[in-house]
Image (tube, rainbow, N blue to C red; front, side):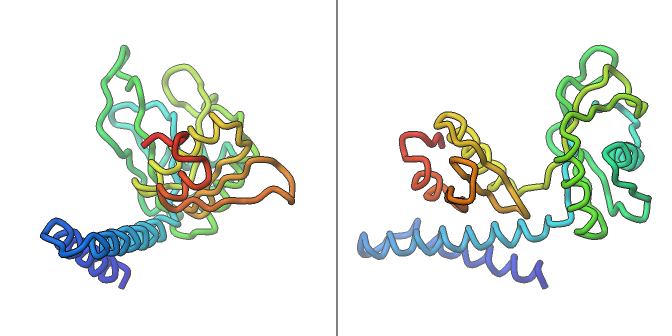
Length: 218
């Protein structure tokens, strides 16, 4: 059902984009059409994000040939206090372009490991445990190379990753204390405390509204 809905949304976006490229009788109609396209793209991105709610990403894990990713994931999860069995992991895979190989056969910049779990509750447990044990390293888990810190984060769509990166950069420049994600949604807060406003960031327009157009890099 989700796949059919996404296919239908993508088809609508493509048709509207084709109409935009074609001749448009008035400027107002052109603006209205672009607004509709952006709204559909935002809805499509939110649907895509919902499909990733059982996924997490392990980053800064050394990458080597012939590695057993499921075993690595279960070992690292155990180290941060969450016990996973083979039945809990749907799949575990590296994502992104294969990195250049450094000395000793280790990847210079390892790709993240994307893990899909059978239940969202397991994902929440992992993220919660990773927040508590922020300084944990790969020491003692049998990975080659020097021990280093690793991170567990929720998986974002490509659009949300770019938006989150821009939000963090803008927040860092302007001294905002908190920019974070939860359930695939991006939030920002300038100061701690209950009286501080929490802002939801969905689009580039939200970034410009919250941080200012001159402070957001596209």
